[in-house]
Length: 426
Image: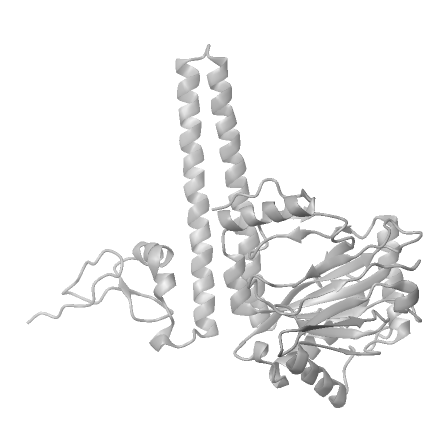
């Protein structure tokens, strides 16, 4: 009796000659007669059903394979849109030949073509961004994406914690979701970095922009500005930036070492089961002084850094404020809220003292920056550390109509104005 092999998971075709040549690399359970059918089935159904080999959590190699499939899917989308543009162009030419006198009809078709060109440009930009994100995650996973710091005589070795400090930090994270350590860096380092960023801010050479709200789970949805709710100016910074200061690389190297240690040793439930923790970029935030700055009482209202599962798990920040900063004279406290077992809530005000290191759980700690009341700018550098797999899934999602509508309503309620009017939701 002739052997009958498993049917194709997409079209159902069976073979008595040989097994189908393509297999889902993640679960190893589904066969396909062609690569095209494997890609079609993954996009339409299988990626929801697939749970990895034997129903176990997928390995990093399986995650990488899935990311590469996602890249192929985005490339296919771009090719499809390009074909639609070619079709629209041919239709436009036909109309021009047939109704050359109908200028209104010609203009309408021209506008449709411009819209299609904008759509493909946006799709190409999205593909480029997602490809860069995936490649960045792959290189991080291989240990190639790091702070880029090479020891210098000016900065020396990256900052580290004593065993006691590291234990206290891990205990605070596990018990209440936040912890801080004083004098993580000395005031000499604080002043050098503070001077560097304030010079760039005041001269307009640092690429600072108003802090934005929104963005959604993928980070690609509507972003908006509302100065009364968020009054800081920010610069996103990566070790690969051409103008990246050595001092930042030095600090980032210390942060990376700290988080690696926490991921290994902290008993915090949020870090359990996370295979790979990565960081993409940091944010330099300047809250203008109440007197002599660009704003009066700049603040950031209560929020959670990651309430929507975008992959961020740890927020790590270092304050770059002058010696002697006090809440009574300068303001700018970070107020954190901790839920008690009886349902009540306790608020704690943390002073942004120069050199202080603060770590908290990104996805569950409500916090706000209280208004700056003194005549000094409030400066901090923040790095978010992410669950590699969760971050990759979030960034490959299309903005949804429901999420876009929610952000539009939020923006209207806050009285903000959008900086992303061209967002297209799926």
